[in-house]
Image 1 (tube, rainbow, N blue to C red):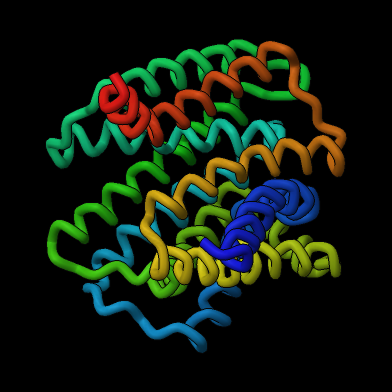
Image 2 (cartoon, rainbow, N blue to C red):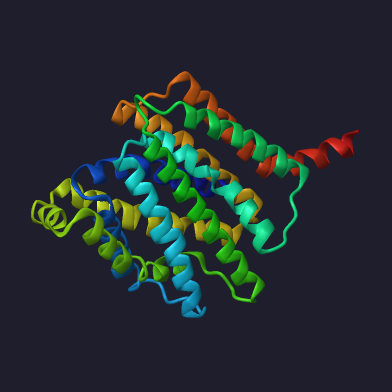
Length: 297
């Protein structure tokens, strides 16, 4: 990677990390499910003009839109609204990697490596610690909803894997944009049912510039710009060079939430977060480090 490519990767990390702070600001004024509806509506309205529809059957776009769109973001937005700290949410959400392992094992028949099992145990220990540290700055419902968001993200990864196994070519940015056509209606129906028409109408009538900025950031910066740059990097460099940069996003989110939201982790939450992120590192780099050690032995 040249310096310009490295800067672009770090820009995406910063955009995705700051995304969690923006969600916190967004759900302060807009009901979370309505916020999801607005986010995906604006994403599709703007993105569909710039990106052509990927050449995959609609059933795959619907499956992806329902899992990563409705499942992940409904869980995440509601979690942050109902007491999950934004920075901690960014860490717990990374458990998606381990939900992916479970789904891939039982739905695709993929086998686990020793490094993946080690990473899974470390991450599970971290999640247990974070879960037991609820109260104060974190609610249990926020923690459970974040885990639900991570589970949905993991399921969406298996959807993508199934698509590849069926011979379909993945166009990341086009896939993100056109699957965005799916979530608005489910989000709207869920919002009307759970949040109420009165709350939705009030939020729209009193829609502020800060709310508009939050929706625009979630739609254009975090999605179109972020995935646009990310797709370009994946097209130019091996995935194992690009993907590890995403591990920095939770660190950005933790720093941003501390500085901008005055959030602070307890000692137990910090230890749990470290264990979870260490588990993720072992999962990503463990096999490679193991081969390196064996070659030098």
